[in-house]
Image (cartoon, rainbow, N blue to C red; front, side, top):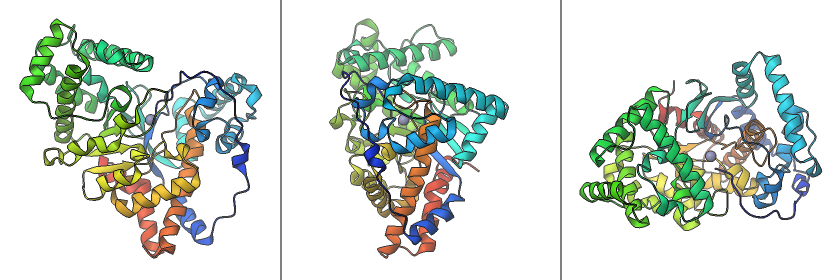
Length: 433
Ligand SMILES: [Zn+2]
């Protein structure tokens, strides 16, 4: 999830009504939850290291459960940083929480100790961290997932940028990042031919892997479409050459990107790098649901040429849960990531979605929070991570208990599935010890 908004300020809504008394969990849910509490999680998708100031004016443009007023964020803000939430306090909450965070970090003995404490608190063995550069990741507990979308922009992309201001800003950052990658590879600009650019791409994937990357992430649902057509090399090479002389129109640029993306999909399979793809709603007013629809990936996911690559459907293809679940169901190379869903959906909807994933693809469903930092929650990603880790564990226990009650599994098998979702599936996918 990338949280942006250009909508005008609307009414600030308080959502304490959501904190209405929750009934005590059923004994079966409690037993499963308690047993799974002992299992540390591998969190497949987070933004733990992404600083982003709290911007209270954006609250009313976000889904209700992604607002700072979500009771699970309110309680963690108090518990972890001693900050009392109130809509009227605005940025003061961020200032106070960040000061408390600094004190806590000093008391614990520095940044490494702070993250160790945070991961212990959330019972996280490994968190995958989405960001452009590896800074802050450590190759063990905080593992890096860089952005492959950056590699799809070898040429100026005005025809893509002109669609909306968010895409323009995103593309600007991505192009800057690509220019930096080229410079680091000893190149002053994009190579002269497509073949030479693809050689740079292959080498870049190797460099990322050597720097600790465990997967690569495509967020093209924000910048273009998840339709990746099968564009032949000769046409792509001609478009690349043309694009170096004159600006490519939108359709031509997309066709070039389609070829680049499919090249990266295949290369990642050979290099043992799983491919993460954002497949869901998203922040800001410009993401187009039809373009972000997980079913657009069918032509890649069902093509046997790509069966050697592991694809992770980030955010579970929501709202097309069942389509995503089925895309994963009968393919050993397609995985479901649960991230973002715990702050998009209330418990009832989250449990319902989990049941579908577990019925279709229990061996390839991955525990994941998304844990966004600002601008919607004071103190950033740690607050959302603590809250969403707990919340998703509770939903998982409830979904598993329901499947036991429905006679799908016995309790022992349900616990095995729970352990797999929390960490076993991710260990297999990434080859973690
Ligand atoms: Zn995300």
